[in-house]
Image (cartoon, rainbow, N blue to C red; front, side, top):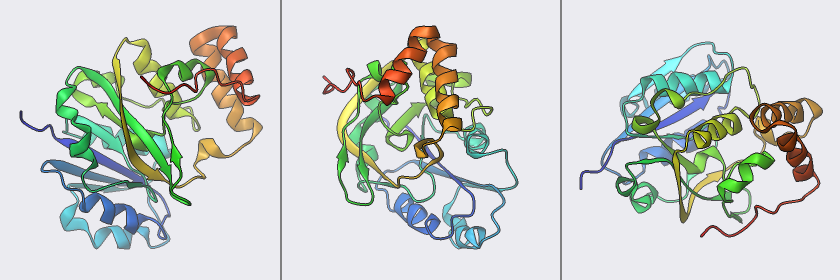
Length: 241
């Protein structure tokens, strides 16, 4: 069975201390058909100079001002040619050189998303993925670094809503789930991620983004579930079958 092309998109802005580790990690992947796309938001701290050291190994490099991380990720999607797309942003890495092959993406041509578990970069602890029942509570099954999106299957559904400066990844995955697309969980650690992204920063403004998405998608029930989630009511934290 022919292995599908995988497009890996790295969105970055002023991350000179972490971008090189991500690039090197992607370039070390043992998979025969990877397209690597780097979208830089016009960095001014030396990030672009580091990226350019690897320019010959990067299929697409864009450096220009953007409207935030989800705008940058959409720019990457628009330039991707792979069947599958993964977003591995600055500072994050894959757990192993063989992980893409280990996921056996070619076995799931009709799936919308294939996802696995995640490791916390700071201490290597495992964060098991949740079931899709977590979505109405405002909780992704796993971080987007551990997801692979089927670009061919999803087509124009694979696009972030940029007005959600925080939790745009939650909005995207809920939208995909509501189309009836198949979600496939593979019990493997996929990515190691750095904590501290926008959606991990506790603030009322961030919570408003989350609650507005839940209310829009699920009404008052969704809003209530989102609030219960903040109170540590997690009935969806069940081991995936």
